[in-house]
Length: 191
Image (cartoon, rainbow, N blue to C red; front, side, top):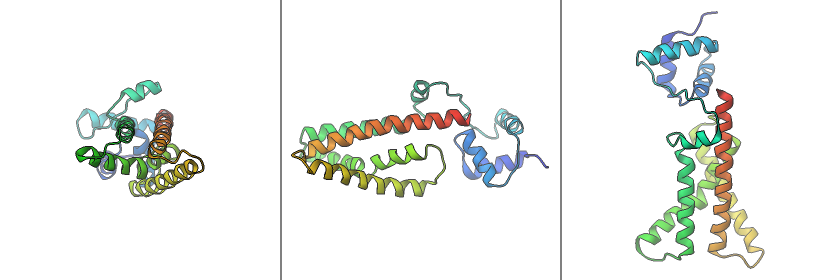
């Protein structure tokens, strides 16, 4: 059985641009390249030492440490910022100028993208599906979640913009924590 060569590894890295060791292993398997973990790690160290490739192989030991690494978890914080900003704009009843534009823009994200994006990350924490599938599922699930929340609030006297955004913000924060933990757990198991 021929082993993994430097050229094959460099080609896969340049073609797919993996972010983690787990995604690199997935791409190598998709290409039909056979390798052992020791062989892969040895080649990665060689290629990194001579500057041919750059991969992050940080060992994540705790969920807190994972969240502190802002470069890899920027989406976690962005989601919270968008949800809380939209909540404050709706509660303050922003109706004019830039505040109205921002309220509408953030509202599209909170109603049409973020809940589904987080749900997709909970179900598929790694890179099992491609970006186009993630976007399509995110939009579909966000609309479904937003409609469900609206219908449930409409059953009682709570069908108001402030009630709707409060429930969606709570869902987003809980789903964000769950998606963050699932991503951390996936990364920990991949290492």
